[in-house]
Length: 265
Image (cartoon, rainbow, N blue to C red; front, side, top):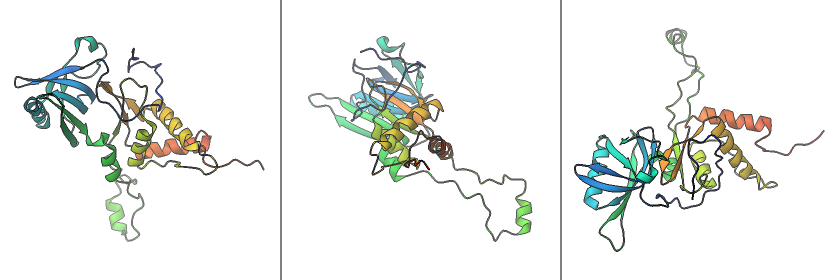
């Protein structure tokens, strides 16, 4: 199967992905990692610049442990893509961990002495995002108990409260599909606290319209950005709740996000 380049501007991604996400390339291993003389095979990899989003490894338990230990200690580990896939890989040659936490799981491969290990950035894990949503912006209005002296002291500062640190989220998809599963995308929007039309009794198709419209408009406005990935697909969703709210508001006003019946008077 020929897969269009992730860097192709003409490539159209749809919310047609299937579940579960399979973190491996259909043609085999995508490369290898080496650390302290230990080598492991890479089944899938996704990065945001040099920062690792997801890493799927196959090898001996001790070898994988050495590689992951170097990554967790914030030491860069060189990645060598497979020869057949070198032109497809647009990511870094040195992998580094993100400052965010990771989730890690290991499973023994039946009939072998090897294991399959998966390391996933916490902000790519849907359940983690729903259980730990981001902070909401603080109210910009000052408390009514603020004195004149306090107002004068705070005059040089901005009148608008400082927004929280927006943390992006990452939605994953299968390598041989053009986009992620619709429910995966909607789940991450829910984790980001983005307002969304969950259902309409008279128009059951409207939530699907919202999902596709927000996906397409999000790509156009770069609130959604394809990431360097091989063996899987990955998109970064901006964590800027205010920007998402602006997009939703524009969609409702302009009509490409339907939310109520229009009546002619």
